[in-house]
Image 1: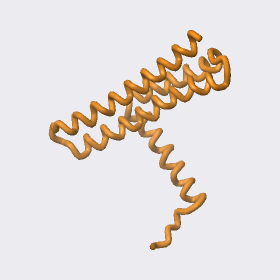
Image 2: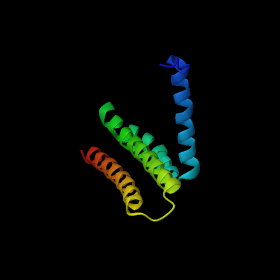
Image 3: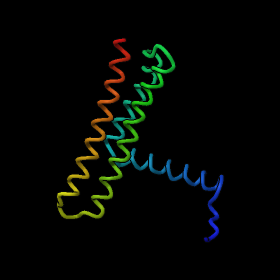
Length: 120
C-alpha cells in the first residue's frame, strides 16, 4: 500500500477546499441553485421567528439545506450526463429527470415541514 501524504488534518483541509469549490461552481453555473440560496437567506431568519422551539427551527432550516444539497447533486448528475452523453439517449434523459424529481421532492418536503410548523 502506497504512503498517502493526504492524511489527517491535511486531508480534511483539502476536502473543505474542494467542497467550497463545488459550492462556488454551483452558485456560478446553476440558476436554480442561486434561487435556492436566496430562499435559504430568506428562510433562516424566518425559521428563527416562526419556530416555537429549537427543534422546529432546526427542522425548518435543515429542510432548506436539504434542498441545496439535492440541487447540487442534481447539477452534478446533469454535468456528468452532458459531458459524456452528447447524443440524446433514453438513460441520459431518465437520469436528468430523476435528479429533477429529487429536487422537487426535497422542495415538497420543505414545504410540508414549514406548513406543519406554521399551522401548529
